[in-house]
Image (cartoon, rainbow, N blue to C red; front, side, top):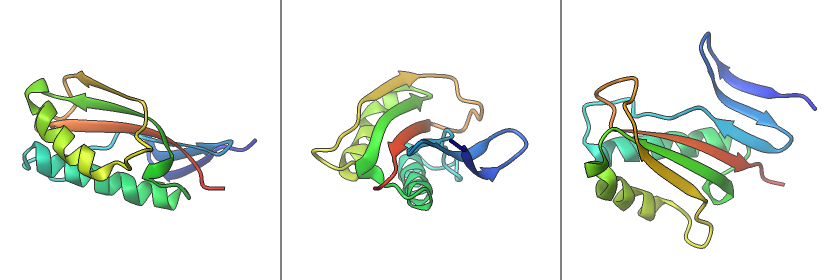
Length: 117
């Protein structure tokens, strides 16, 4: 079965789709000067757009990996996540503290989702 790739660059593709499964590259905020709430809101909005482009949505997320530059931001990130995620369809999730590539970034999310039927 073919692999579809979207927004292909020299280093990564923003989306890869194979066999009905959508893989998103790690998403970070465009405005790294925002606080954790603002950065998380930007990241989740980007995820919404990319999933829609891939014929999916947040109710179809299969797994999420969340990377925080500082675990002190855990509550702030969760406050945005919990208002965004679909209750009753919350995906398996891991959250870890990690040194991110851009030191101004506070959060990065990696999503795997199913496509709509």
